[in-house]
Amino acid sequence: MQTDTSPIDAGRAATAPGTVWFVGAGPGDPELITVKGRRLIERAGAILFAGSLVSESATRWAPAGCVIADSKDLTLEQMSAWLIEQAGRCDTVVRLQTGDPCLYGALIELVQPLDAAGVAIEVVPGVSSAMASAAAAVESLTLPEVTQTVILTRVEGRTPMPEGESLEALARHHTTLCIFLSITLMGRVTAALTAAGWSPDAPVVVVHKASWPGEEKIVRGTVATIQALCREAKIVSQAMIIASPTLGARQWTTLAKSKLYDASFTHRFRRGITAAPDGTAPTIASQETP
Ligand code: SAH
Image (cartoon, rainbow, N blue to C red):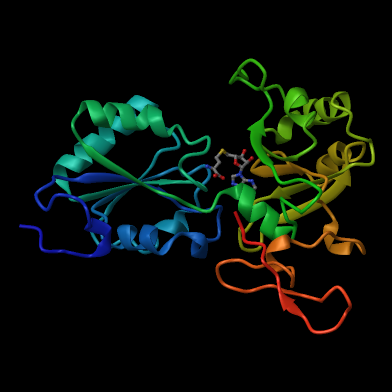
């Protein structure tokens, strides 16, 4: 009988057979896994990790006797068969995925056969490489009065882009673009940005292996220069392309400030102060956040 009442098991039937947990391993730095993900690894009976992208060190917390397999040479059918077999054998099976499992992770393709086999599944989010890349470059993906929108996308490779989602069409919004899986197609990226009206001088940053200890590379350029700069830096894989009107804001001298921290703005946690019209005693502002 299962006696573990840790939060990990909260909400799941005590008698449930093995559960397959799709765990976001984070972008590379083994410390960027969530506490919950790490605790699952610590009690896993079996772990299937995406070896081409997830550092094997992410499995360092696995207990003795845990069966650890690399999925890099397996087909989806072989992976689901492996997960189903392990769920029949042990309580906690972990499918360790790079970044967040819900982004470009073949999540549903693996969940469907598990559903069909009656195996319970759970998903634990992870730090996506889009977030880790922004952090590495100290860039904010949103800025007041610049852009308040982030588009996570890719250019068309072997996976076709659905109608209306060409990079050119998305880039016309002039929001932040985090472009996955596209470093070898950089020519297409810059052509799409140009066709969408981005200036040749518009900044673009590429982060290779964001957060991987000792392996991270950050290349800053423009729509006109980024392709050659990435070629020079020999970046051909595991890279995030960020194109955004917010890039470089750390050096800007005029920056619209977030309303949330404005001294005159009242919200749930703080009452705003405004100067009286005659400039004398301050009064409490009445504006509330929506
Ligand atoms: N689920 C993952 C994305 C998997 S698709 C996530 O949330 O990050 C793989 C693509 O993610 C790569 O082609 C690259 O564009 C990006 N990527 C993954 N790890 C990265 C890293 N450490 N640094 C920069 N880009 C990375």
